[in-house]
Length: 88
Image 1 (cartoon, helix red, strand yellow):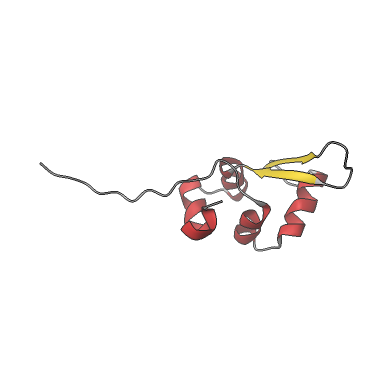
Image 2 (image 1 turned 90 degrees about the vertical axis):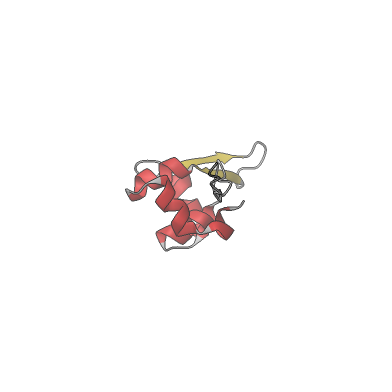
């Protein structure tokens, strides 16, 4: 009987702005501003304004959408992020 050992990395459903910044070669503040303005076409995620606070937002960046924006596969996206940065 042959046993195969595979190392799988738990991939998060949602990434943080600093993860997108790493693969886009910019800073996380730039990612947050562009998400609030809707500058990413196609959209890479959502920026939701928190209730009761006009200045605070939460950000959800979806790996599938970020990979599509970059024109790469989700596997390549996580390879670019590296295992230590993808754990969120």
